[in-house]
Amino acid sequence: TTTTTTTTTMAMAMDKCSPKKKNKKKKKKKKDEKEQTRKIIKSKCRINGEDVVDDGKTQNCNNSSVIIIEDTKKGHKKNVKDTKKRTTVKATKAVEKAEKSKKRRRKSNAMLSSSLQKPQIAPAPLPRLKSSQKYLATCGRGMHSYVAEELKERFDLYSESNEGRVFFETDISPRAFLALRTVERIVCLVVRFQGTNEGLNSVDPREVSASIAEICRERGKKPWQRAYKCWNHAEKIEALSSSSSSSSPYIPPSFLVNAKLRGGYRECGVDGRITAARVSNVLKEMLAWKPEASLRYMNGGRIEDFQGVEIYLHANDHEIVVGLPLFRSVGGLLNCGGRTLAFPGLRPTTAWLMAKLANIEDGDLVVDATMGVGAILIEAARSFKHATYIGGDCDLEMVSKAKINIEAAGLQSKIEARHWDVTKTGIRGVEENSVHRVLADLPFGLQHGSQETNRLLYPEVLSETERIMKLSGLAVFLTSDTTLLKETLMMRKDNDGNAVWEIKKRIPLQMGEIHAEIFVVAKLRNDEKGWMIRRMARKKAAEDLREAQRKQAQIEAKRCLSVVRQHNMVPRSLLMSRRKKTLPSAIKKRAARG
Image (cartoon, rainbow, N blue to C red; front, side, top):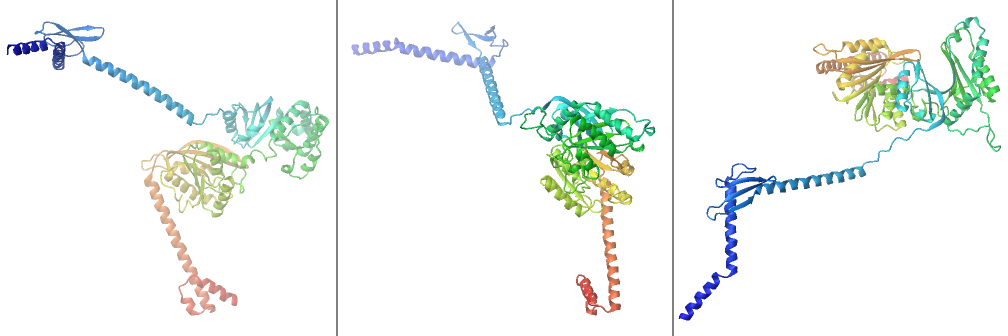
């Protein structure tokens, strides 16, 4: 028994002294201490050196707050790093990581978008000539300022302009001028003689013609040859110089002098044909060109049919201009690019100017209240392609012609032609306050309509324009009856007495012998009551008109019946029938029998 007890005591002592059990005890004590410190920190500690445990102190070391806790039982100090500091460090690292990932994403998105987008191709440089050349651009009277503006916008050219003429100088290839929309004719300038024609009445007209020819001679050969090269370049003809090989000899061109004399030259009796003959003789001697066709065409032939070089000569009270018109092979600038219509209407330059003044933007809805053959809408749709166009007219024949012109231009997907009568039905199919721009070539009362019909038409066009147009929308009107349009614009006021329309611009134009103006007006206010009242009045007037027509038809039918009864042309049973469609045909058949 004693041996067994001693062995057990020795085994217990061995267990107590074993290193495994000692390590376990140490680990357990450490866990307990850590838990105690965590509880104290959670309950009473703060960050950055503020109120800590009652029995502890704080000290700041290199921006890291360390809490010193005093253990009363053990009598030693322990340093515990702030757990919140670790979390903030982790948070800052996470933020930095997120920013880096964002930067990577942005870079990849930018690379993807740049690969998907179409490459922006810089505009091709304009072709140039070896030397600069002077040009004359002709246009309608009143449009010279807009021609100068277009030259500045398209080619950055400065010009000198007067009534119907714009002079400029450049080395740009003349083929680039085909893009101009306000110009009617481009002339390669050779002679520009400025001076007054005072005292012409006391001079022999033949001497005046000889002096004009002498001015052309004084310019010399080089300006004429340079102008002829420019003409060849514009017409895409290979100019053959005299220094070429013997296999391709120089062929002198045939030419025609087209002389137009105005002002004092015409009053004093200077003949354009004699002047043209004198100038053609001078050019024949100096350049060895062929003037044979000149006499034939000036004696009654059509200049448009001539295939050679045309010499443009124009003299007025201020200057004499001589040059070579370009693009005759394509019919001039007015005919190139498909601007000619099967049924011609308003001049393309004036139509384009109206569309330009309207400031049409992408997505706009544009309406032409008096469309005619659709010249304005076709010219607008060619230049401002990302808009929608609707036009209408009261004449069915005009609407059919407009549809033919639209189909020939290939714009049937952009322009819709409708039939409406503004004075009776209004602009049908267009909602209120939905239109951005309105264009209208109002009847002048000369070829179509009259002054009396215009007094009824203009207020109705304005009231319908006011109904369909949005606020701050623009309307562009062309008319020769300027006083009537101005009066109707000024008379339109809302219930508070404020003006509905504001005139922004007035551009005077000379269209042949007719003086006209373009009005650019803006809508300032909505007057829904006003146009609703006018709409009801127009509806009532249309109903009254239909009722009057019905009564007139009944009176006419009764008169026809009385005539039939008197002459015993048809049986009484047919007269008493109410079938109106069979009655006229039966009367015609009976009358044909005699």
